Amino acid sequence: MSEASEGTERPDYGLDAPGVVRNLALAAGAGFLFWGSAALGFWSGRLEFSGVRIVFSQTGLWTGLGCALMAIWMVWESKIGKLKRRERLLGRLAWTGGERVLDVGCGRGLMLIGAAKRLTTGRATGIDIWQAEDLSGNKPEATLDNARREGVADRVEVKTADMRKIPFPDDTFDVAVSSAAIHNLYAAGDRAQAIAEVARVLKPGGQAVIDDIRHLREYAATFEKHGCDAQTIGSKSLAVFLTLLTFGSLNPGTLLVKKAAR
Image 1 (tube, helix red, strand yellow):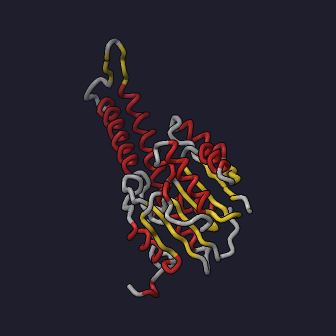
Image 2 (cartoon, one colour; image 1 turned 135 degrees about the vertical axis):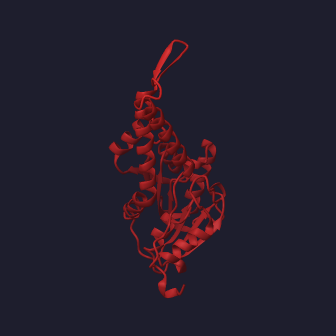
Image 3 (cartoon, one colour; image 1 turned 120 degrees about the vertical axis):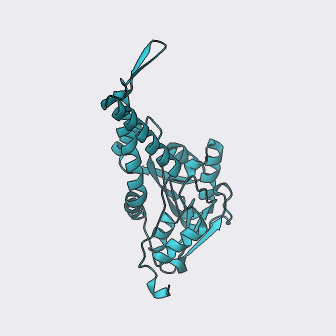
């Protein structure tokens, strides 16, 4: 394909947490099977365990509906919602076009490329360790292909690197971004190390947007320990709704971060 066609193909930013979506779909199918088979008279729809009666014909329906809706929402969010969210988040920052940008846990380049589209003389760098269980088709080649498709290949580079040991000197970047990545570090100490690294490589006066599905208070406290002001932005009501809907599994939010000037 010629260079003239760059930017004419639709980018593919993958499916977030594909294993979770698969499990939700399987649980929905099982729920509907229990409900449907009972409704058609193949069995009573009731089982008793140690004196406890469970009405599978009812629980199956509600389980199926709940899991199916959650799976559909996750697919929609991966394919449509996160693109819209990217633009809202990056729009919260002041851009000159000459920034040097770091995307921490860039995946297939959602935030990385969104930032690069706002640059003229600047450059955007993404780091990741490319875990496919976190994002379908997660590999550097996919990121670079999306950059080509969005017409910013000349402003984007990727590196294989651990966010706990960011391979750049202090005060390197004007802007840091991260979306749904840092929570994949399961130990609190590892997450704190990653946030400390982001603060380290930001220039004095630099800014960051950290969007994630949990641990935002923890991130804010760590940023403040490392000379940054961190404020939560976004819809609190939506965050509360998703927290309740997922029984605490999701507690999403966004931090707008500013590193103190020297």
